[in-house]
Length: 92
Image (tube, rainbow, N blue to C red; front, side, top):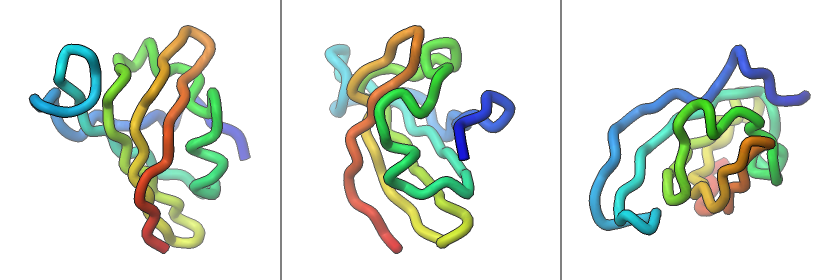
């Protein structure tokens, strides 16, 4: 499947100090989808990250509801055309 803006990541927690972006702050987001974890963390999967307020250094909990599986990813790039995340720990 493809990302749809009607099911965006939800801001779970406000910026926290000491990790991530150049400002030393990051936020926690949660995203749930039936898409596989590898698909979700692929380049430019989340197409509206900038308008959502996602920033470099934010952490995203990705939940694959069809497997089920969970992964943590870090936002490494945010642009008008999408976002890039690097995958971290995956729990399946």
